[in-house]
Image (cartoon, rainbow, N blue to C red; front, top):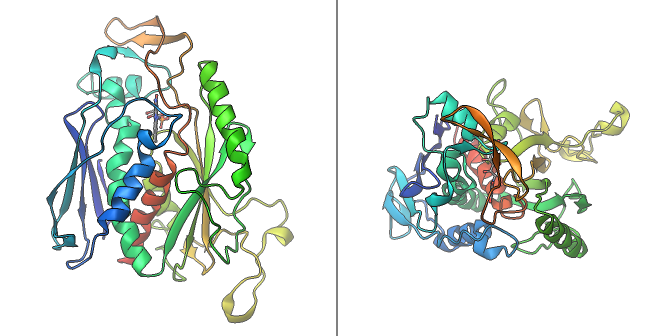
Length: 343
Ligand SMILES: Cc1cc2nc3c(=O)[nH]c(=O)nc-3n(C[C@H](O)[C@H](O)[C@H](O)COP(=O)(O)O)c2cc1C
């Protein structure tokens, strides 16, 4: 299914080498002011052009609004955006499945009747409409005092500090490469450059926080906060794991002891118990696999002949999914949280 959500219904359309990618978003109340500057800033954070270490595919990411917004205000009908794909080169793709891409699984599932050029709809390009739709949701949450922000927690073997889970105040962070401890940026960039020079790629991890949430958000048993967010987050290609709060070995170390007004002294639970927000900041981490397009010789699979074949992937690709993918994490969370809030 390309659609998700109950109260805020999102559909993503298009594919990496299709004429365009886009989204439709239903449930945004009439009269909602859409902050187009914030939306453009979120799109820019995801764009390869803003990240020197990323793929050379330089899409302008410009868009047309097909419906639902007039003069920057939602009219209550379906919001629809389209982003033309201009900078793709389909000549480099043939019917050889690339290792650990979606090519083989999708080709087999659809009996060959599927567009897998550039990863098709399993491509990182699909996070562009996700980010734009999520940015609209983030704007609504922000006006309700709910703030969503993330940082790059790890690239390869280089780690940032974790957020202080109580998050009394939002740490100052760079917009394009947010870190709690900005001094690790140089080591992360070196790790990316080293991996690229060896023709290899890196795994990475993001940490995301949400402050200002009401207590009790989430509908047990199946529409829990963790389940709702995870469903949206796992749309992001390359995402392999999501975890909420901390893992402490002893219950005595894990439990958050109460203080006045139902607040807790610590936030090891990451702001969620029983599938519901508990009034503390919601804190979760996502880890991403290394980008599967490595430059080293590999063995692919000829989908027509049904045999393994030597394969060297040409063209420059991202070395790792962060920091580009971080805004996709934040925006996916915004869509899920707004969906729960509009219940
Ligand atoms: C922002 C972003 C950028 C990405 N850039 C690339 C890339 O340049 N090359 C590539 O092979 N994969 C890239 N990916 C990852 C692949 O799309 C993904 O690993 C692949 O489709 C397989 O999906 P899976 O890892 O979820 O199984 C990117 C993903 C994201 C979110």
